[in-house]
Every structure is written in C-alpha cells, then in structure tokens.
Image (cartoon, rainbow over all chains, first blue to last red; front, side, top):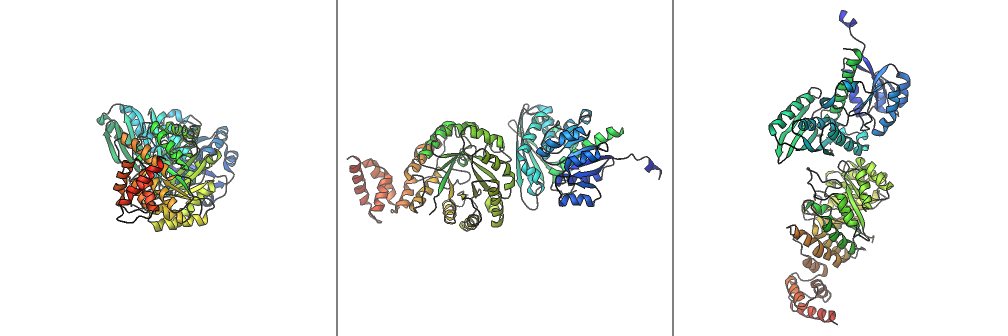
Length: 297
Length: 338
C-alpha cells in the first residue's frame, strides 16, 4: 500500500517505573501515532516488569543506567514514574544522554508544565519538564483561569482519590505531593497563596477522582468567573475527555467554590482512576507536541 | 493492673467546639491547669491538625505554632503533643511545631491508609518525638484490617497505636474486639479515643481499658467534635474509683474544667452541660437528690461541695438522710477553721 511508505518512523520513548502510572502510559502510548515505547526499566524485577516483557517491550531491572547506556541516541524521551527521590538521581543521567525527561514524580527538577495553562514552544526546547501531580493537573488550570479573569489571592484545593488508585509511590511521597501541588497553584496558577489537601477514600466501588477548588477572588464578578471556568473546562477536556464539573462555580462573599471530577479512560485501572489519567494524558500530550517538533510535522 | 495514661485533647479536638478560636491566652490557661492536674499528654492545635486552618475545615485566627508556643510556655511535666494528618500537614510543619516546644506527635490516617504516614512516623522518631499512630474512623474497617494497619504503624517505629472512634459509632463490643486483637498481636501499647455521639464514650473507654488499652483520650467537660470526647473529668473519677494507677488528680482535673475551661467557653458565649458535682455523687456513691442540698450546705458553711459528698459516701448515708448533709458540712467547716 502506497500510503504506508509515507508513514514516519515513530519517536522511541522510555519509561522508568512500571507501576500504575507506567502501565497506564504504556497503554496510552500504544495508541499514539507518533510515539512508541522501546524500553521500560525499574530498579528491581517484578510482576509488572515481567508483564511489560510479555508485551514484547525491552524491560530491565537495570534502572536508568541500563536505559541510558543501551538507548543513548535512539530514545528521545523518557517518562519517569518513580518517586521524587528516584527522579532526583535519574534527571542528570537523562540530561547527559540527551533524553527529554517528562517527570511524573513530585521532584520538580524542571519547570511545571500543565498543558492547559502553559504548554508552549519554549517547553519543548527544555531537557526536563515536571508534570506537577494529578491534583495539580486537575486544579491548576481552573485556578489559573480564575486568576486571569478576576485575580486569586488564595487558592485551596481538596483532592479526593480512591485508595485503589493511589500506588505506593504516591503514598510514600504525600508531603512532596502536597508541596509540589501548592507550588504549582502559586507559580503557574497565579494564586498569591495556596493550600493543598489530599484525602484517600477506600470506598467500594471506588470513588472517581474529585477535586474541590476554593478560590478567594479579588473581584467577585461571577459572569467573568463562569466564562473563564467553562472555557478552561473545554481546554482540559481536549486532552482529558472525562474532566467535568461536579459543581459549577458558586460564590459566597469572596470565596468561589467549584468541584471537578475526573473520569478516566479505563486503560490500566478502571475509570474511577481519573487521577492516573489526568497526569498520564497530560504527559502524552506534551510528548506528542515534542515529537511533532522533532519530526517537523 | 497496668498504668493508664491519659491524653487530654481539649485544646485540639475541643477546638472544633469553639470553631478553632482558642487564643494563645486561652491555651495557656487551660494547658497550665491540665499540667497541674497531672495529665500525661496535652494535645494542642487546630481540630484538623497542623495547618488545618483552611476554608475546608474553618480558619483559626491563630496559627498552630503560636498555640504550641503558648502551651509550651506553661507546661512543666506533661508531654505536649500535636496532631499531624498526612495530606493536610507535612513533616516540615512538624519540625516547626517541635521548634515551638512540641515533644510528641499523633500521626493520624484513615483506618485503612496507614502507609501514607510512613514518612511522618519515621521523621518524628528521628526527631526524637514521642510518636503515636492514630487510626481514625476505626468503625469502618474489620478487626483484621485494623490489625494490619496498626502493624504498619508499629513497623514504622510508632511508640503507640490508637484505635480511634472518630465517628462515635463503635459499640462496646466493637471496642473490645478491636482493642483486644491489637493488644494480643502488637508489642507496643494500644490506645483508644472515643466520641460520645451514642452516649457511649466513657463506656467504650472502659471497654478499651478492660481489653488492655493503656492510653485513653479525654477532654475537659467532654469538649470535642460532635457530642464531644470522653470527659477527662469523668474518666479520672472512674479510673480512681476502679483503683487504676493514673497520674491525674481528680480535684485538679475538675478544677481545670471549672476554673480554666468553663470561663474560656463563657467568654466565647458558649455553655457546657457538665455537672461535676453530680459526677462526685456517683464517685462517692451518694443518693442523687443530695446534690442541691449539698450545694446549699457548701455555701452556708463555706466548704467544698465535693468534700461534703465524698464524706457522706464514707459515712454510708442512705436515701432520705439529707439531714446528715448539714452535719458533715459543719464538721468540715470546723476542721477547716482549726
């Protein structure tokens, strides 16, 4: 068939950490027309790693060292799905190997990137971008939208996620998780101050990821606030289709309350794990933008 | 019998009752009275733990660190604890609380989620803090699950683990099942924290103690979220009556309620339904209708109503012998003025 000759070779990517996030990425990247997973590494052998090998992907317990030694020059981008500590040690090695790092841990070595808020060409020239956290991906767009519209002096978010969708990495890093999310709400959300609360809920069947976003606004103009929130909703939905209002913005005094729920695509974990989807979808979105740039398409 | 240690949480769980508006001055007044009463651990701060002052939980006009510093300035013997709920507060907040004088921490998680507290418990131990693992909403999990989660806290290095009835939803039989399982399978002491929503706080506290718990929570006059916690005053009276070995002094604990807490509550336009004189009737085994007569006699002879009631109990007064009250009050007055 003629058209096959015109298909560009996909950009090869690596994944560090075959946990919930890594597994979900493998499925999402499997659908990508621009990217393909060439290698998955971990620092230890596991059932998850074996499952990756079954899929015909090179899977090694040699960690980041294996990845950079074997794939320097062939892998252009690496998704790090380990932990803050894990990424701190991997980041310089990836940089050295010329691999673009998409950091899905709260390490925040590179600048925060939330596609709906700040993804632009400049980000694609960096060697490391940080995906904040699932809560950050879910709430920063709304805080930034309200801040641009009417100014936010204080943002507070309460993120509830189902216990089943919070893997050991998230659990071991909950302080880094809240701190990194707070930093993102201030630095790119634009709030003068922010507070982040994370609650795990073990209910069965598991709850969908839900985020309550309180903003103390400088100008309580509800028309502007509504317009900004709905515009933001559409932007996020363009790469996370299951992002929706559970409670549209309401105001009391100068405090705006809204709630967003994230239904996942049900790739690796069932649809309740919107927290997984929102960060992996954002990462794939950034990686595809980078791939287009590399391919010149 | 094992020694029983009391943690008073008037200034933390009780903070819910005053919408998190205890001032540093209020804290000093109440904490110094608790310390004088021999309470083992005094917990201070926002009801939802360190940095709980938020839109979601209610803002406090004072930050936790000011309150801890205020308490630390007056507490001499008691341990001074803060509550840390991972997901709300952080290790950094805990370090700041320690700098302000806290020397104990209760790291609290939902009963099924102890592993989010691993980093906080380990950090707290490294900082040299007395560290309690606090499993909240324990009614929502099975006995086996509570044990599994408690073992996690033990493995992180916690000094004690609590089975916490945050909803006041446990029945004495649930408390017995869970506490006795923990006591049999852990090598660290076990504690219990009750809420009086079903009127079972003191009963559940006793069920916990009889099942082997050695750490029990209370708050003065039973302040606290919902219907409040086990009343520390009642807890001390009952423990004394049962001859448990405790450090707290009964009268001084009651005085902490009467002379420190209640004026603070009144200054905020709040009232409690506590009737500590009536509690002493139970403690001493006196006919209940003696209450008002004893109060009148106490005023007439200028003696402590509690002494009258306890002495009537010692003399084995029975129902109908209200006339003895005058005699006892008069005797006490003479003794006092000798």
